[in-house]
Image 1 (cartoon, rainbow, N blue to C red):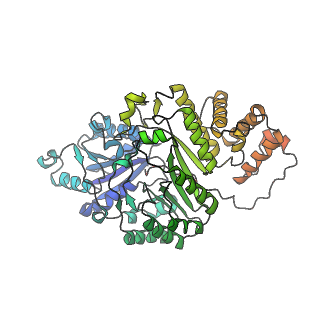
Image 2 (spheres, one colour):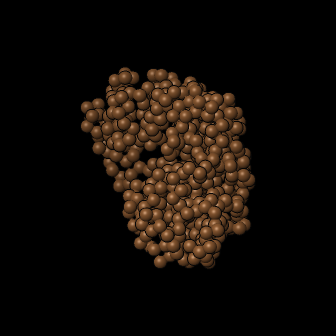
Image 3 (cartoon, rainbow, N blue to C red):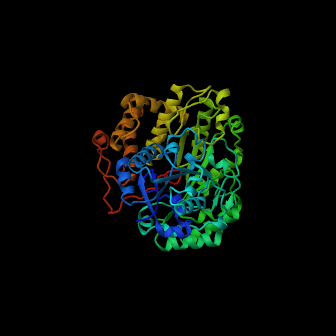
Length: 515
């Protein structure tokens, strides 16, 4: 049985915990007496506790994130009731700041704040050496601040991805840590300076992963295109080893795409690259308030180049609720982004993450946030609670309809009579919520039927036109059974012959932060 168990609750099974693998890789002599045990947030806390205790560890290290802190708190409470002597060490962004009043921190024995890759090994060594309950262990403080590690001190963790991980899960990788920007809503703005991984060593690890069959690599770098020459070398490496089905995800700043990157991007097959581009806001006043520097002209040029010259799948982020942003200015920004043609637009509600400086605007802009994860904005000076609720539903329905890829042709019909994508979709969102009173668990055919009702009944589009458009979208996903509600309008529409293989769709965006 291992003395040390590293664990976390991922958002989904498909998310392999990158942080745990870094911790285990850097345990040194303790590595052989450790184990990684992963769960997801949909499992019952009692079952998680049973699994952890069955391994009879002396120390449990838990990764705590915004998406799992509620369930993890229950897990830690149960562990401490059943085995009070068990040492529990917490780490992760959710417990790296504002630790004083967090219930999970009060339950745990120690918390390592910051990047714990090296500090965790040191703490475990001292605890085990001191006999856990000895005087050496007692001298360790509850809150332990980790020094920022540089890559030359770290052992890279990529050999700890199992064959099952490679075959079934997203493989998280990184070429750098930190971010040079100071956006107040983002924890990455606190990670200064940017540190670059040793590229030759890193590429050798990537090569080994790909030889083992890894085809989905998700880079968690906050600014992958910050160093264009490094980005170019990585892209060239991946292009040389591309195989059908390969998919590479990067986060990038939108106004920095120099020629040396533009030369290589068109050579990638369509859909093999995904860029997550943080636009966040087009409102210059809001951008200045939150210290976000962005050249909008270069941003728009980047989008136009990617859409016209490459097959890159573009996922763009926009934040609702920023200080200084009215509903109308957000609508204008949304319409501007839609016109640039990204494949997905993630509408995020502003969150007050622990440690960020966005809270300095609370008084002036009357920012009121939920006290519970994910700490989303409830209202502010310019958008009341009802307005924020409407935006929250807008974001959810946009995800179900537009971002899902199920309604590629049908989605623009929603605002065809309005002229504004935002206002047209907001009207549909409000109608849909009045109709069904929920934003989840809507079957695809039911959603199609509701969309048909709205487009023909509220927008007054021709039933045959709408049915034919929905039918093309439906087939795009490899489906051939005509939904009952539209059959009378598709009497002459042919049913394609099944080809044996479903139509390939671009991958949906994975969990934003490595689980």
